[in-house]
Length: 208
Length: 208
Length: 208
Image (cartoon, rainbow over all chains, first blue to last red):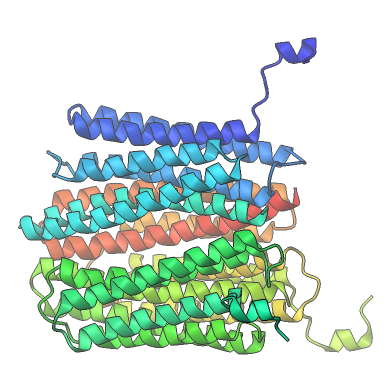
């Protein structure tokens, strides 16, 4: 039972709490990007919302590294905690990079298929969140990692198809350059989810 | 001498056998891409052959990870076995990515120099196979890693030259976009061979 | 006090000396690229200067790996020494890749903003050099790593802005392709500085 002092002190957040926060933040970022593209109005403001989520991610990453430097006994290898928080940070960076392209490239309207690709990203980030929440039950975490890999294959296939369609349908080469990159940046965000899954699988493999 | 039971059971494949299989599969993938480009007919069918080799690679990677999760004593660090099988998997994924571009981008004929670049990839994968087969004799494995690095430098130089020629000779900007990417994807496959060499060198450096 | 023999033998270079040399070489490479772009004459000769610095980097990397293979007790984990020297090598490779583009793509004159981006690269490499020199005083090294991350954010933001301007101002799509890649390669060189910072932070986190 917690003592009087502890009941008044803010409950200290552990590594698993912070990772869960970081993963939920990524999922929120993907949702915000999806919402922005389905209601394609007030785009600069919606890009700022994604940017704010990315800043929030930086804060959580910073809190994780600070905690790591102040903690002697960690729930798993120090370097894996460091690696995992950095790989989670990469995902939200790429989501922000994708959102910002729509303003920077002055995109007027969304090409068919873009939202399908972002839906795969949303699903992949949901699985990242689930995998992180299951970190203490390896079998469950591994099943979510397999799902992340499956979504990565799906986004890769869809991205290739969208770029092939782009070459078939779009005659303006500047539009081809812009959209090819937009598709690729979204696909890279899903790749970064797979990098997170790889770190999780690596941690589990080590402790097996 | 193996007992009666063992003689009837399928011989269990060890980590080194599985890595050798995975490396041979990569080499086969590079050969199939080379063959497809030298006889540039029936391209969709030949792309399917590369795709089938890539699926075979997924099976071997899966077998490696499963074995890792079921094995207590491993020939080298668990995380390095995991890392090596993932990096080998990346090579065949990139070879498949390169092959698929020729159908997706509706490439009619092969530009001069493409086959030279793929020949460097074939040589690099041959060295990957040799390095993997020599894993138990570090000095020999390191010599093959040096060769892989040499081929990576060569593919980098050749890729830069081909892209410069592309800008000099091709006036159609859509063709420039398509071919620049094809050259870059093939070069990235060779980069991934270098990543494999880096893991092997790292394993050897650790145990020195 | 060193004995007679040691005074006559060339002083053996330790890992820290070699890392300091490798980092100084990277900084020199960024300076040479900056100088080349500010005085944009005799460009092929100036590209050769950067190339020579990149070769020098290969020599130092080779000396580091050789020393690693001959040394039993190392100042930090063997695999981190290997990783750090490889990540430092990546930075100079990318600086060379950036320089070579100006000749390969027959660039006549430098677009506004290019030198600002290269200045961020020069600052980032100065911080890499400072971080490496401070390897034995973790608090100081971490402060330089934070600066490297700050420059990486700055180069990312600047690169996005330059590419947006490129799309706004340039009508020739071939010029867009060439300049987009030049900006991206310079930005990737700064990314590689961040990878170096990540290895340093990882080493410090481990030993905390």
